[in-house]
Image (cartoon, rainbow, N blue to C red; front, side, top):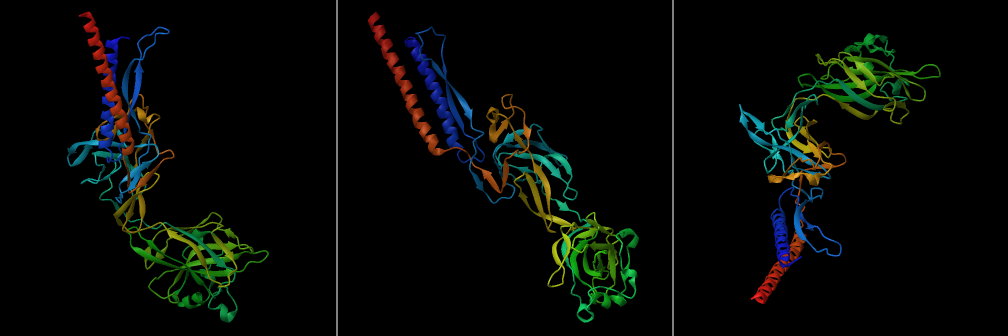
Length: 460
């Protein structure tokens, strides 16, 4: 190595430190940029071919070192459509290329970003502050089926009315029901003169439509206890009040089970002792330990549920052995543990929320919460191998590998964004070291120049 090589080495050092200060300045400038990942500088020594015992230090090459795997702080924003990835993964986005026939068009080329400050544009598409349109899957809120894959759109969503088809019910029926009649007759059983309204079998189809007439409602009311009351919905979303009563028609003994019948009021506007009561069509049987025997399938179908002249069609009553029981109680009344139904009126979108598993859930005016979309998340085996682009975006490369879909252990944090992972204090420390190294390289150059001048003086 000679003086001229020393000059070349010092020049490479100046270039390397200049490259480092460039990265430092960019990191500091983007310390407040949402989702920004700082770029560090790594140095590689370049050695010419050497012979043993004659090795000398060589020039230096500066290279960028990405920090895509380093998490930035997650800060709450209060904006429902903002989101941050907690862990590995990047949002999949595309850029908008224009509008054709009133429809937005997109580039079709996927890009990847950690910038999650998404909000709806004028057309309802979710776009971040750098112009990246969030990709994923859109769902039909009524059916829960995927309607399209691509840019996520959440505005102007409506939820069509849904007819009630199932009621999920869980309760304990008292072994000895406390009826009005039991206080005077000492009997808790319903034993009408006309037994045509009673059902002892579990064949709901064969026994559907049996009814206690309104003229006999007072006797029925006195010999039964209040059951579940729930609001069901027609196909158009009209609410229908379903009021029920349980009547025990047989006690259990060593050879026969206890039998209960469930009735619903045919007229929701009349008082309970004046309305006709329709049998649900199934005999509910329990053994002498209080365990449900029949229906064994966990479902009893109320065929042609009709209230106030409105036919809701067949409605399934869902339960199982653990949720529908017959145990003794001091009160002698029904203890309801679970009561829900699957119908609702039409609704408009009021608000949205992002779940930790990557779903965008809409809250509608009818009280329903349904999935509107799922967020497209991509993972890479080597995320630091991605190619950095402008606007916080990255492109796939051979070094990064192909994108893998899904969070895979990571989570999304809604109403939040990920801040830059730049540490200002750390960047200032690196700046001081870089400045000292740059100055030292200039000193090497000035020293080498002095030595060359001395050599030239000798020649003269």
